[in-house]
Amino acid sequence: MGQKRILLIVAGGIAAYKSLELVRLLKRQGLAVRAVMTKSANEFVTPLSMGVMTEDQVYGDMFDLKDEREIGHIQLSRQADLVVICPATANILAKMASGIADDLATTVLLATDKPVLAVPAMNVRMWNHPATQRNLAQLRKDGVTIMAPDEGAMACGEYGPGRLPEPPVIAEHICAMLRHDFDSTLTAGRAPTTKSAAASLSAQPDFADISHRPLYGRHVLVTAGPTHEAIDPVRYIANRSSGKQGFAIAQAAAELGATVTLVAGPVQLETPPGVIRIDVESARDMLAAVENSLPADVAIMVAAVADWRAADVPDQKIKKDGQGVPPLALTENPDILATLGQHAQRPGLLIGFAAETEKVVEHAQAKLGKKGCDWIVANDVSGDVMGGTNNAVHIVTRDGVESWGDAPKEAIARKLMEKIAHALGQG
Ligand code: CTP
Image (cartoon, rainbow, N blue to C red):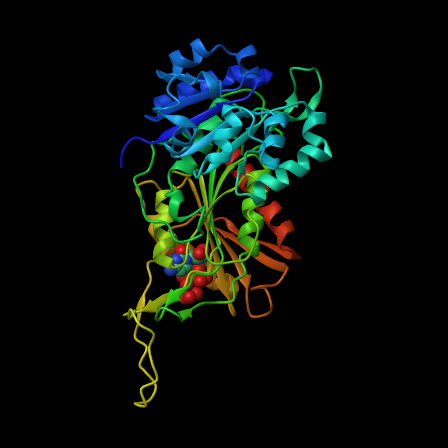
């Protein structure tokens, strides 16, 4: 796999100067960066300084593209592996949401067939305005990943959400997205193939007060949903997992400021805002996507992975041939959690779930040792937990057991992520 390429679109906001630092960090990771600057971005950063940082030509106006013949806006938009808009102003987000293409940056965004990451930065009132929120919802629907802005004191003197996240956190998010083969995952929702990982940043960037988002700068990896194991081209083995608990955990982690990679089995759920989602089908695809997402500070394996798959999967549908019921030979799937437990890049905090129908805590305690993880979240799945809205869990660690009574899965997710943030804070 060759060098990965970023097309960076810089819009005109006070945070535009931070895009220079972002380019420096991305280059340090061995990525190639090419920049397009909007007209108003030039008021904040000069194309000359951007060109020095990218070591490349900087593109501005469509009509001054001396080489529109050679490169063209279509090509420019397709040569990258990922398009990043940083900072993404309320204006450029509005144009994107309605498909306006009135300069090079917005034309490139309309023409691209590559995944797009928007990193918004704007005044808190502009961020909270219903028009901006409507545009963000539309862009998410269109498949754009939107990073959550930071909260805090702003250049304009107001306080609230809208600040550009720190460049190391943006770079970490970009690297997490690049670890995957987008052509086969984000766009088509099919299983990813393992690709070489982009170099990752060191886990802990070191900057100002981030106490309002205790997982800021951390990478959290979550699996969710069932897996489907093919029997033939039209049939598969599955289970009742809905993915709700895992998705709620991914959302809670993102809300606490983490960069979140969610490896999801086949489920019909919306991707939580800001979360990087990789869709997979089988246990083996899930393992590949999980390994591809490393390193991570925390991994929470919520998925109900099928323990077995068909030993042989014929290319053609199995037909009734009048000879009786066909035999179905099974073989064991890899254990993703146990693989991570022994992995050279084992996450610092590794958490498994246990789906039990009897002796819940006892079985969970046994799994803690067997799988080499730090905590097990045990739930009794004999009722309607799988597919339901509520859950009751026992957090089993080497120090003891904590039991949390019946609550909505979102509440369990928030409590779990708070506990994780607390544990990480304690080192
Ligand atoms: N798990 C996994 N890979 C598998 C099976 C399970 O990563 N092939 C993970 C699950 O995501 C969960 C934990 O292991 O975090 C326990 O899953 P569970 O289904 O409760 O247990 P099993 O290992 O399948 O054991 P058993 O079926 O005997 O209860």
